[in-house]
Image (tube, rainbow, N blue to C red; front, side, top):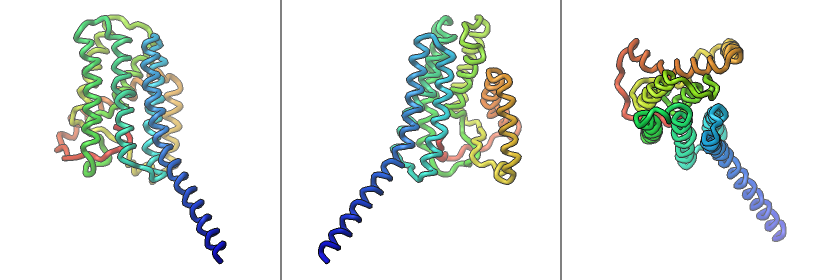
Amino acid sequence: MIRRRHGRAGRRRRWEGLREKRGRSIFLLPSLLTTGNLFCGFLALLLTVQGRYTDAAISIFVAMVMDLLDGRVARLMKATSQFGVEYDSLADVVSFCVAPGFLVYAFALSHLGRPAWFAAFLFVICGALRLARFNVYTGVADKRFFTGLSTPAAAAVICSTVVLLQGAEPPRGVTVAIAAGTYLVALLMVSTFKYWSFKEVGWARRHPGQGLLVIVLGVMIIATNPELFLFIIFTGYAMSGPVRRLIVGHTPVPASEPAKDIA
């Protein structure tokens, strides 16, 4: 009888040990995706130093995919934690603030003097402020919208511009336009304009077949000329906030904003 009890206790301890290891593995996966996000941002910095601007932009796009997945995986596995939220924001500062700011400076703004240098820095600081505001505000805002342009979307505008120009040195007129656009995108991040979050799209849920068809058609359109269509899509999204304000007017900004996986 004593041996049987000891045997049951041993099996119970082994089972609890396996459950604990499995739980650690589940919590580790979102952090690994966040680490991949951070690695892609760091890689983009290295590629920018080497003058491989298009490759650096693509690396930031890959970081966006990692950032999109880590929150989804964490919620799917019920492995969300405050540590994951903070770690994700720190990775986003590198991948979607510092890396795009350094990329646009090295690619286009370095020959325009101090005003252009400040445009790159303004992009970084506005992105950091956007992430800080995003983390502090939590809980009661409309889940359909982001307040201010998200940092991945702002980085996508920069990267799609670099990809569109194929990493070649732009003419001075285009360089001035890029500097002005950098100022604009930076300010949009800390604005109060509302942007669709695409988190709760009821039509896609009610008509999954049609939603899939729209996605497939979108991918096919982008594949015909990815450089141009990526630029149009991300620039159009960046301008959708001010356009929406002009159409529907100003709505009061809520006291807080829910923490999402895209900041």
